[in-house]
Length: 331
Image 1 (cartoon, rainbow, N blue to C red):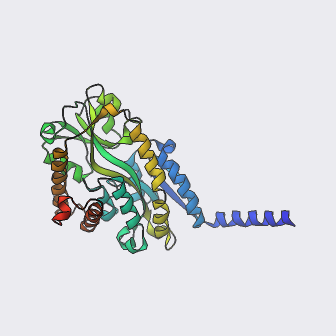
Image 2 (cartoon, rainbow, N blue to C red):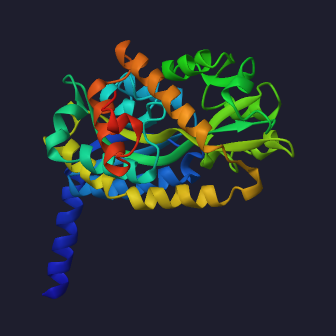
């Protein structure tokens, strides 16, 4: 009898799985199916099955192709960086606003906040797109081939590998008087390594897999200053998923924060201490104000979402209320 019950239960589960909605999830991971992000999405697939959604994972190493396939509805869901997510969610893409997330704790509080049901209306764009979760990928740093280039003044005229599709990056490079070298996530590291550019910006994860230590060589380094905070976003064609799926997805993905952050910690620890370039406190304060002004400009131009910027400022001030922007209630 017990054997019969086990067989019946197995048959029932197989029928349920077979009847589940089948959806294609396109995942951008610089390392493809061998990457940590792709590995996390294998866990996400198990969550989806519990929601009666049978997700098929497909890895992409070219982010533009992943985005284009999602836009063309060849993917029901996609995972992209915040910069690439801008056409699908102005609110969530503003997480990567320049200088807006100075610490991992601010990022953690932000993810927890926007994953709650009360924030659901901000995570939906029209009747087509929904953000199904945000995954931290660590601070974005400036990589320089010459470590003496450690001030904004010295960056003037230098060639910077600039994401051509990211308006804030273009604005920032123009602001400091550097030369834009149009690049994308697939070729920026090669340009840095072969000397086509003097400077590139990237998270710690890029150091080893993309061999950026070759561009750094013996004369370069990495400025230990959070230019922005990279994140990956799960985006959904909302009408292709069950009612309420997006909210459940956001809460599940928020629960992956510690696992994702452990990868960031590991990648950062893998960079030799001698590679880092520490900035004087006075320069840090100057850069913080400069980036704040750029954020305001981009907000006023409609590139950044004002509601997200306000939320980020409140989270920064909760952590460090003595900062000038908090005392004066700026931005």
